[in-house]
Image (cartoon, rainbow, N blue to C red; front, side, top):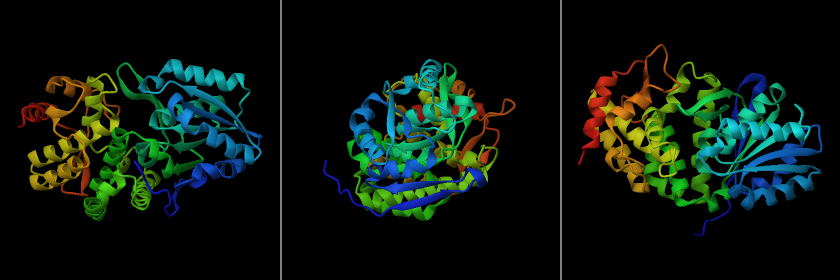
Length: 377
């Protein structure tokens, strides 16, 4: 697939007092990475964590950029896939850093998608109680979501992202040109997260996506960079208000309680990507909102149509990686890390761009709803 490789550069500031940082968005940022990273380290070296796939594609370009800035690259690659977000791999990464003599004044770069970013951030937070780290997200989902906001984690047998910390990067370099090698499924998974920002509180962005969403999926750089920038501004605004998800930041989980349940029941297998689960989860959240009389079902259908038009599966009984049952999904929802005192919150909506937090979902009613969705024609 041919894509244009030029686009305007965008910069978004995440305001967190002394821990504030910039998100730089645009094509060809990897070529200037050395210049961007040099001020962050007092050592003439940079540690880079990647996976085998991304490393084979882009580690060479990053090393050239670092070398041009007088920096040595020390690289470790983990196996691609969700299995890298484990205690065992986290231990390997920490052992590598310690054996290399890494210190708190060194920089650790996450070169990869959300899995590498989550693993790297958690390792950085633990390394001698905190070393500087930088996100260089190479997937659309990571560029608009997981690389921003400081959530880091590995998975547990009981569920996804249950062991982690809030630890902010010093810089995010979102090179949209790197997305050209992204498989179509990965592009669509990231697009689901872009739609999420429109559904939370930006109906004008939703209207824009109805016109330009397919250009974003096709990686047309101007539309792509604009969508990434709008998404990052939305997340930066929310994170600045609520860094540790004690309030409004929970809105960023629109679709995720249902989506994480789908992933858990699927065993986090590659047959269902996170963004694919979120797309179905957002549709479920909006349709459940309509069931409760909170929004018009036609608006829920409009959101579903936007996702389906891009090629995402939204109907529960068509989601890959099943079979799913209402009882298994509800049991998985009970493990959600956002639960408090046995209460499971849901992010629902009173219309397009009007998301809100329902603090205590009626799981018996949710189970009945899911049963109906499993038999929806």
